[in-house]
Image 1 (spheres, rainbow, N blue to C red):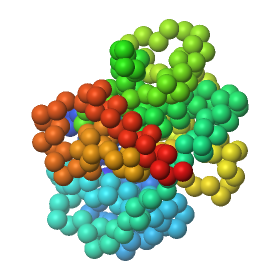
Image 2 (cartoon, rainbow, N blue to C red; image 1 turned 180 degrees about the vertical axis):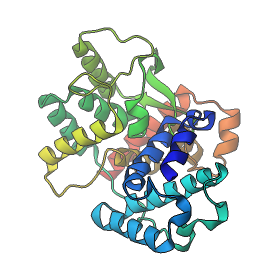
Image 3 (cartoon, rainbow, N blue to C red; image 1 turned 30 degrees about the horizontal axis):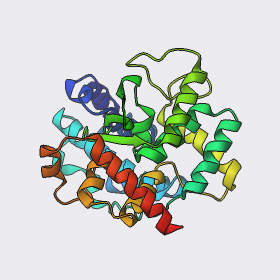
Length: 298
């Protein structure tokens, strides 16, 4: 069965070597695959089955989730084929168009983020408040912020910086903290009542457990609803785009922004990353550009 193939795959070194965020994506897709196809011989699954399954996810969850799940199905089919459960080129999903959701364009303003932070803190979501402050200042993705450990905070005379690696790609990336974000972080850590050792996760939910993808998203939606109402759909991930808009408006160079964000906004990012390691000067340059851009956008 497909479930047996996936169980075998999860016991391999190949699975163990995947980035944590990648494994999360697979398991998220598997939650939709398992109830319908988990106990099936993959050779018996038809194009009609896959088409109906994908449509159901699109209608009951979202187009974005349907697109994600079909991508995971296709990757899982290749694994099952490699393990001898099916034929690689006979994947019935290849006859189904995997339409993607339009790219997001939503942004936040600094004032809106301050309102989110204050409401989160007042309502006892202290870990979330710290995440909001750090995510806004650093432009790190929510997944990268929530997995930051105490040892990844570097300080010197110019300020404080987090250095980490992108959860999905392993690309080295860093984020400079503003004075306001650093103050929020220090207040949060002081309120924990315990010393955080080097490998301890910094950001925790109200129960004291490190934030997971689900609990961080749930808490953010709760606070967002309290501040902006039920119709607000912008996400914590949109902070990243908002920072990029500010930095571009403030004159940040493409390679500086791409390097700070750990992505490929700059066409020369691969060479740039090879020869110029992530450093505080680059991060501070982007932070200053964001301040200039924020003034222009007001």
